[in-house]
Length: 186
Image (cartoon, rainbow, N blue to C red; front, side, top):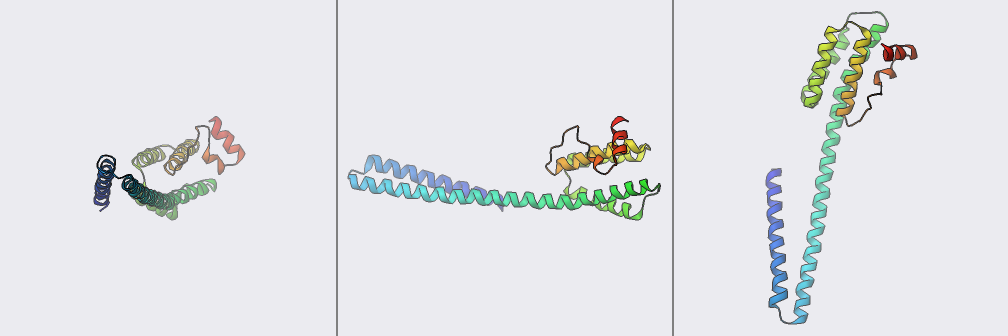
């Protein structure tokens, strides 16, 4: 439907443009009386002003719809990424307590994240998650898991529109100062 409306919009714009050019040519070369020429140019000015107003409103409406759509996507992505954070923090919390097994809650949150990622994640983020998941299952070193988690968290933030520097250590927010130092130097 949008393609059809866009096509009709272009057709009407072209017809109006041809009409205005025709009126302008007619007013310049074929209208002899000076007062009639002024009237024709007045009509052209009014049509141009109306056309410009309608075009401006149309463009603003399209931009507002685009912003609304982007906001909707961002909110849906936030919901999906919340599941990743819940799972990630559950794993970190259990690791701090010395529990190596994965909780039922972490598994459920991970599955909800994966389902949402398939619908709302970008191609690049899905690839990055698969790389992260492969590393997660292969790496036993906690610090390497945290480093890989930091990289993936940056990818999530990038997908949401943030630009993080390479020096930013997002995972450091949840670590104590000693663990942050160990993570930096390991």
